[in-house]
Image (tube, rainbow, N blue to C red):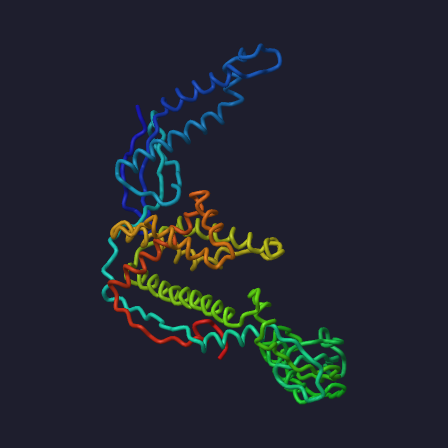
Length: 439
């Protein structure tokens, strides 16, 4: 007698949870268990017996529990698989098997509790509203980028004038609370740039206007939310000596600057053209990213599906493992900072929900990646490398390397499909805001 599905119940902890009752014939388990023990016995060695001649009762005594466990697990897997296949259930995660109280003397009864994938049809996206940033890269954006590049290569020169924002200052300082030095309130030859928020605003304000060689004493009150409980909201006295004031000096945009930017012959126009090309690619990438985020938000809003908790838990574990690996690559020890699952719960739910929605949408609208789309994206990505052809060969040397690219193409196909249905409004974007730079 084979194991059979007894019934499907509607009692659910959530709308995706299902419970099925399974029955396993004891005779089938005993028969398979006996055959397995006999195979073990044919190879079993024990002092006092010839190989393969150990009495069956001793073989059963030593290996019976393990054999029973293995046979029962395999039978449950088989019966569960047959049951969900018959009912065309798509199981999410793994089932939880629980024994059931039963008066049967011929069968073992179990309940399998599990989740299924949600069944839904992606909805029409014609009511979705998408705001698409628009920005044309001009010489003005190239000039702004050149200024940023110059600031990244700033040097400092001693000056006799009073310290101002963006100057580099070197100071000695001593802080006292109630007349006594406090922990962390003292340093010698401490260097920092004024106006970058490295020190508390009141501390920096006290240094602005001073010159090299000057000393001063001033009172300062720490913010109420200061990280040190002993100092939060407290008024202390600082004694400072300004040892150096250095003014920033930006490099000229000349041939030497261009060579430093990788232009071998120092041609400034070539450098500007390269910066412009890089900017256009980055602006395009950021605009696509913002549009993609809006599309994904719109898909989630339009398709309020239930998400299997089992899949969310699996994604949380994957994100936690990725975080550990990232910490280790940065030279940190994950053990020093215990990673908590709840940190990743929202991100995991969003990723799983989107994955389910995209899978159904791709299937319904035939949005799979085409080979020519994959090739085009590989070639586009390769352009940012010195030898693009080598990057392209690397991708195609092993087909599995194209998996990530195919995923990006599918997402792009989904975005284009949604944009073709939704209400899309073009909105001029500010360069500084789009690039995440300060005005």
